[in-house]
Length: 435
Image (tube, rainbow, N blue to C red; front, side, top):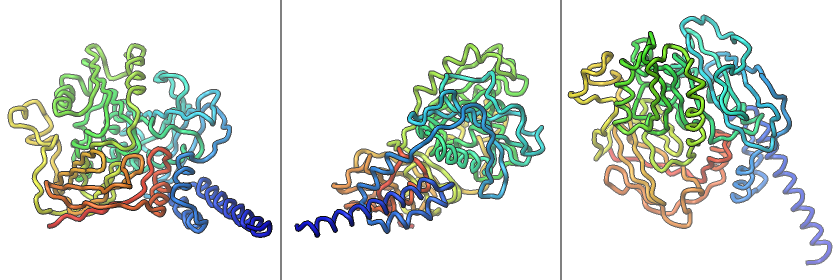
């Protein structure tokens, strides 16, 4: 190559790199997943390779110094509702370090008639280990924790914080007291993907059987996906262990991962916190999120809430070869006398949900379905070997066996949606089942 040709080549390479850098800067600077999605086109036009994009997305954006202490923030969720929330930024915040988040959901929702923040926004007496973020959102009578608006709110808060602070995507925990604890159960059953675990303090899942809560949202089999830390008091005037413990024991017996710490003398308060702070924080430390869990169980009645990590339920209906899957919601006849709020089920459904259970072993995925005719598997190069065929077996029948190509558009699409350095997907594998 001559000197002139080499110089031209170097100039072209430099311009291409600058174009790619500028495209990614626009992507990182986006204020929301929707805005990030609009920036994808410029990245694609830069002719970047999949491998280069993958490395950049793994590395993530650069973070700068931020003020420590309580920061008051707000958002407007996609349903048009305005939310306020307080963020406790750790002292000596270091933008080069990844930080854990604990959401702390308050109680007394019915006594609040508006969205206005309360108090100083500090975590106060429920502070745990040093060096973590605390997020205090607010719920009120028309926007309780057990509603899809708050599912949107918490998700939007997580996204916003990751755009400003160096958050550890695999250490986002949701804790709550009383109504906030009950709401944590709801979040776990509605939107499991962003969260590592749930900490339930003085809550009661059966509150969600209230007729005022819309049908088609409460699926206790979804609790299988994440671990729970549960405390209830024996002298709690609202939810004593005599009422709540049969449910907790039932879930544990069925295989839901629950670390249970009953407080025999506990009332409807958190006076036990000084003794339970250590076990609470030990549980949190021991349970980071697995962004690509090998086992998934997800149940939903609409596609808008059909995603759990690398599974997306697309269509509902009866598929050939499906069978009725054992469901935590169905209480055996021999145990029905333990539950004051129910007959033969924890929650009475009017809508027929669809469910998919998945197990991944290498490049082989085995699934059982009920009420689902189509779903999508999101394949990450971190978990699947794209140089080898992928096999999918559903309801005992092979439904796919072949190569899958890494796709830049898919990588960028889900990177924009999830804003997550630790959870990236290189391909979508769409599965349609025979009816």
